[in-house]
Image (cartoon, rainbow over all chains, first blue to last red; front, side):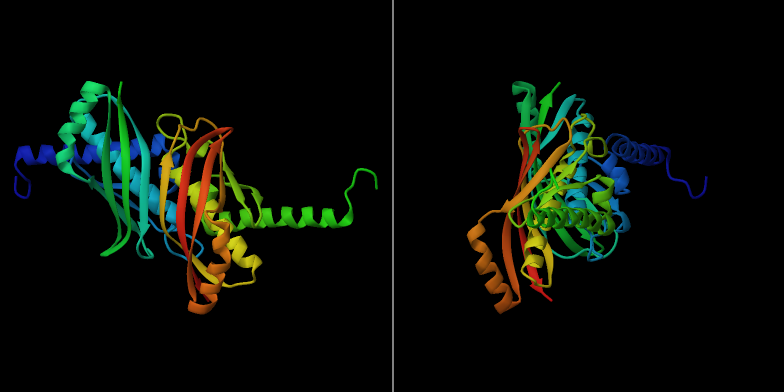
Length: 164
Length: 164
């Protein structure tokens, strides 16, 4: 058919869209703060997860994005990335945040996104090996919070997975 | 009257209760996330600010308090403390968070509080002096997140005040 892509690509797109909607529904159902913040999933893959949030429910007394909302969107993006990678590898774990640091670089004056990636992609095989051997492993995730081209915040968080 | 306290004490109590309610109303009106989290002001003085949040709106997929909510309650308590101290000193500033670190020490399984204090009480006079001289100064605040006797999280954040 004119205008459509080859079957395989279409299927991939469909799977991706379904995963994105699944993740959004999961977050809203199980973490009510994500629903209050109106968090949406922009994209989700093993390489990166991008979440978005509108300014209105996340505003502060200065009409910019509230630091708590910036932190929270970054945490959600980072948790979602590790969770997605673990599920892709067919593992069943409990995943918890151990610590995080956030730098608030610039005021955010409109809707914003958080894009999470592994701090060191090369650490993943070792993380999986340790998880299998010790039943527990640690991984560091970064997330960049942007408003258009402006970097409003930089997050780095350490997550621990426990094999179930 | 029997059972009442001396006038001065009563006045102090009244002022404190009014400030507490004022702070709560201010947070809910200007930072909608604090209303979604059902944040309440337990106590607020120049020494310490304690905020509370119920578990239900702040729960995660594991039925414990969500890391984003723990971070956010700590940020709100720390901001409130510095804001209250600045107002007590009769200053007019814009107060922003510059960075923070949070350690999530233990899962929180019920309603929780965040108690903010200055990291170094002796730094306050220097902070005020710099604010007056340079129009800008930095102060570090700690906040301990507790669920009953359990310390669930430890927060340290750097705030910058700009003289208006």
